[in-house]
Image 1 (spheres, rainbow, N blue to C red):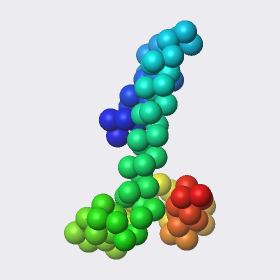
Image 2: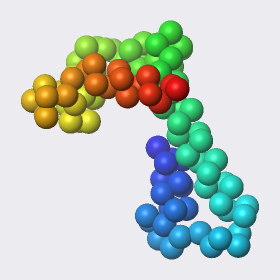
Image 3: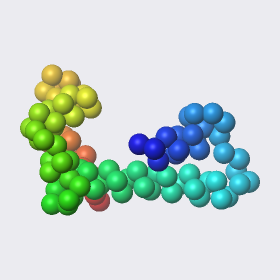
Image 4: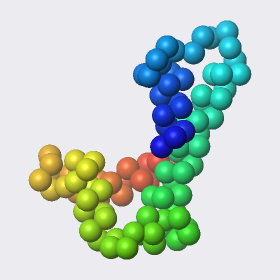
Amino acid sequence: MRNLAYYRAGIGKIGAPLRESHSFWRQANSNFIDICVLEWCKLFADRKGEHCWSLIATDPTAFELALLAHLGMTAAHLGMTAEAFRQLIEAMRR
């Protein structure tokens, strides 16, 4: 989350945008989003990895339901389901 906040700050969603003439800061900002993607993949895309959310959560079923509800991906929200989230994970992996 820290890297996502840094990324958002760098693209101007929080404060002033980075100046195009400062390549170091543009590169650093790009690296923040790269780390966000890698960390996200550790949590959601690598089902057998040691950092997979299902291995960390004390109640994986309740966690998944709460996560999907938070993302608006439950059957009550626009008909989306856990399968839609799995499809998003696969798309992110590719």
